[in-house]
Length: 244
Length: 244
Image (cartoon, rainbow over all chains, first blue to last red; front, side, top):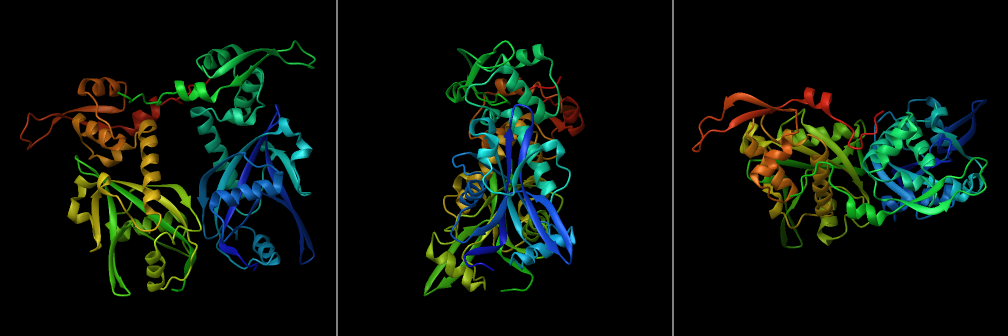
């Protein structure tokens, strides 16, 4: 066991990235052999906490180690501590022993993070050799209880998207309404009629149209918009409207 | 260190109880002497996790040990893991050593719970000798980082109250609109004009008036209402109304 680590507490990150087509999740390939069997499966980026770290610091470190990025939207959403979470597949526990981690009950504090992939370029972002972006709908199996963690993260992201303007973290600074519609569609797992969607977002005073259009596209260039957090904070109301 | 405990992970519970006047929090008095100084300060109910427990199980156990109740609204809301959280006051760490707990960095997973005090009776509920209900506005100091935990719990409760019908967990099954108004006022820290409040809740189809009035009150008895979760689930909409 490495010095300075907390043996029973880890932090895992569900890193979402949007590429105008899919909602992707950053996964780490775990490659190892055990009793003559080779395993190559996928996990969320995560690590044991260090003794001198806060939870948020640990999450930011894990994000930095795996993407090279700092100052990214990062939110703690739930902790997971089922006693069997490392024992669902026998080779998960064996793998933990291989990496010198003898604890059988690790509580993990889960964060999710939102990244605009287009800003950095897909390959530029993934700095560890064994990291990869995978469209969320293609992820069917992950190590330990990481599928549960991903499901909760997605559920949390959907609720947040319906209540707060967090979707803009996944879009470039300037975006088109079609890009925004696609983002809402892939996260909510639905499709919207274009006219209905425009009507629904027409009340968002914080969506500011620019005198600027897309460049270098094959189709008719669309108008660009920005999200104004300042306008959002000024115009938002409690959804219950209980203010007197 | 007692066998079967996880030394670095605890669960703390913010137990809210409403008594028609105040929003109260269940606190545990910690009485101990150290180097000739006697300490009597207050903490949230909490304990280290056991190796065979899930997080939710640990929270339910702590609630049961301190109130005698099971099957109560209990929600994980945030984990706290600042490296200095046990070291803010020197005697906190000394106290942990007294109770045979040598770890200096404990991550705590915090839950909050909602209890209708009136149903059980104030004294009946508090089963441990050193437990007490304290009105939330009178709580100015707690051990370790428990003031932070309480503040986050209250913030979380306010947001939930504005978005979900959780307030009814704090009311008896049958309640008056004045009791409901008082509940919203004490949690949100505001006052409502009676007519405005009635107007605002008139859209809540899940508030069902009964052909029944209060009994044994000095004033004119008011009509009783129940909350129907069934009607709520049928009539609720996403606050964003993005459904197609």
